[in-house]
Length: 576
Ligand code: FES
Image 1: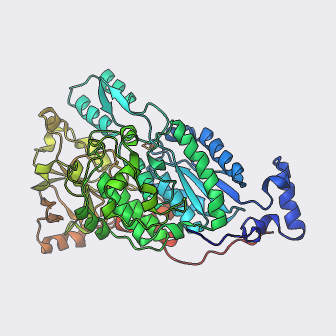
Image 2: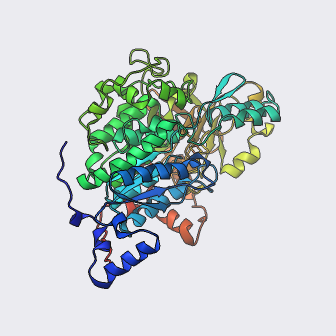
């Protein structure tokens, strides 16, 4: 595809460096202070490298080296690289929840780009929220952007078994609580699940979001599957640095790449990967930043159309390193090519079809053919009913098939504190048929919609061998988790959604076949409860927490801030 090339005079950075009079002189003086001669940066695309590195984000521990690789590519292609640090939003350390800071990162990225002489950006992220946060910010800033995914960490093994970050740790934790593992065994087994730099090596949220960003065309083809510490990852980073310089000259922006067709490709691929339930929130938010429509119904439709062909934890048995050696994402896309629009343009200037042509599968158990899938239809389904009028999500491929049609009495927890205090108490009276309900865990509620949706199984039941129950909440669930967990119940309980009205003992019916989730209480009684309901006191009365609570949208709208999701005018800064 040939695009009209930008001229030097059209570079955004020229507004700073070619500014008339004292303004331009001052900008050059300060660049010289940094040790750069005008020949280093003059008349060249200035490439911002937005890095989410910090010592707290151990998934990005290799970024200092990768930044050097990206810089090398930018220099080689005739650009000028500038590192711009971003908050790292570590999934493991940021609390009350990383989700609360995704929008903060998106704002930071957008404003850092707009307020400085940047012509194009390399986005460096991978740990869950960093991918959507950076993409949302760059999309709103409207400059050419390429994504460099951190890449998955290496396979873990314990006693000869593959150990996946998250997925395996939840299992061994349940075994420890049930008394089947000693504390030492539990700790030792968990340590094997994070054995190198890189993002969680299951098809959790990190791998899902980097894969979908790859499908959208915002990375070099197949970049998301390369293990973080592989030399191929260094080469990919350098090539991304080279490519962004050309993208600036071509003026190839996220708005040119992400279209309704590429979004549909991403949703279809999400189903074939059995991606994380979190993707239903992040993709909607990303689409809305580009003023494209994407709704939960679109995921519901896609779910019927394509089977799960990626045999990856938590729905399958392999890990991302296996996926890479089996051919990676490009090979998987080639398997499902009949479901995709192959004409979509991607960051390397070629179409998706051109990028995946001839991509081979080398292990047909890791990437299954369409006629021998891991699961016969898409991994994720959307439920509605009187308990979730605006939708809820279930990862059916990671659920217990017998529980997909289930009616049982609710045991309600007011919040996580209440749940943790009572969950293992034999007086709770839980049976395998009970439906565990957690409220006050939504976007405003917890706050920040934490990944509490895989409620723990009560210890007395664990000891009897029960490993799954129907669990319902307005929380999210880690992409590495599993079980019959109905998530993202919308609207959330804290803003008066029906989840706030459930009482212990009420019957709840889950019917995955009919895509429904209902509380079997008559409408008049629900109305009485609604009239008596009082909203809890707010968590914050100042600061970012208050801004967040007042402006965050519900899960079906992507949990972006209302003032960021809407269309509007943002002026370019006056340079002085
Ligand atoms: Fe960073 Fe899982 S904790 S990707």
